[in-house]
Image (cartoon, rainbow, N blue to C red; front, side, top):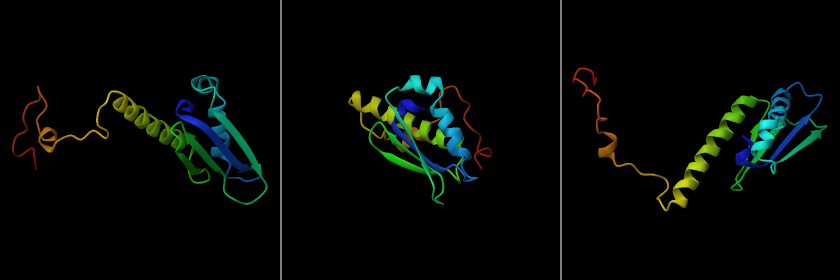
Length: 127
């Protein structure tokens, strides 16, 4: 997960009962495998004393910053969103490095083609 990020900032009040996602996400960031994937990723923890909801802010390697309301979003959901966006960025970079157009545009006639080796659907199946 950290391989797609340059910085993680986790902010929460230690007395806030809504801090579960922050604590779990911090544990995921501090896992050996995560740290090995990107040792240069900064993980910052800010303990607050106000009543603001817990927040996790990540900065992707391309500089895009995204903030998550950790009171309303689970650590697993945040992790999945990071992985999904990171995979998208990785794919985009591969295409650009290969000199290909991004995003990939697939013509309608190709989308509507039957896949090779697949039986054509009957008219009543298409309904």
